[in-house]
Image 1: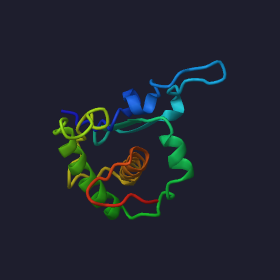
Image 2 (image 1 turned 180 degrees about the vertical axis):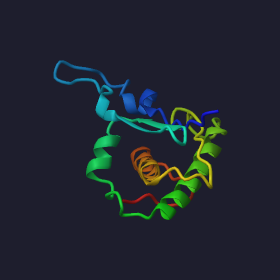
Image 3 (image 1 turned 60 degrees about the vertical axis):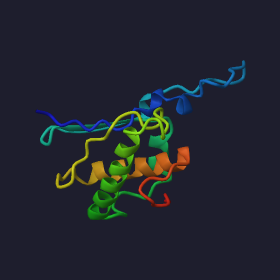
Length: 143
């Protein structure tokens, strides 16, 4: 059985689609492009991460610390804590915005997802917290 890790399809959320803004002749609505999708797959481990978030890929390339800055152990530990906090919020839609926390993340301790997956997932959590003014797992998100 394949274990899929689907990470946050936030492109559908009200906050990221700017649906409440009025479009005038001089403005264009925010649309999702190929650049807004980050996809990581590994057939050997049978997982897939899809992050669809306008601005994340640009932020990852221009603002985030470069690959290799953090150790894989650091990323795995932080990701595990962030995933636990995230999944708890998904289970409490009356307390936390279900538009932000739409689906659980299947990230398991003890599985080596590799550096790239951990790096991009960690940076997504940082991006998410900074963009939506959220605080996961008691850590102040910083770059």
